[in-house]
Image (cartoon, rainbow, N blue to C red):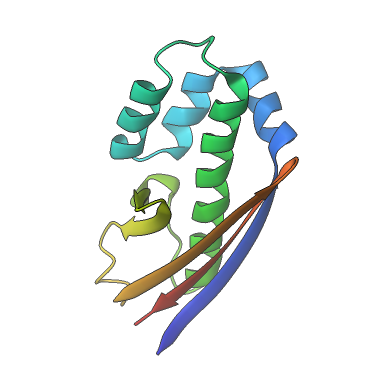
Length: 126
């Protein structure tokens, strides 16, 4: 049974602007789960690490998490850090804190980038 379907699109220059105004650490700590934050810091140990790659990483997570939120809303309202995005052979996979409570048995994630945009779709099964 499908619990929900969510989709989101992010204009990556918006993420770059947030990083420029607030700093990458501020944005990363706001939206990333502890596991994702650890991975982000390992991949980009310095503020001056390649900005485009940081934007793509943070923008992808933002996009996927928004799609998860939309898939469960209005029954459940998740917070950013309740969703962890990992990779399995290059494909994004989800770990939702207390996913069983929300009835999530399986999740399917699609993510695509094109120029200044990232788009994701999430299907949650119960």
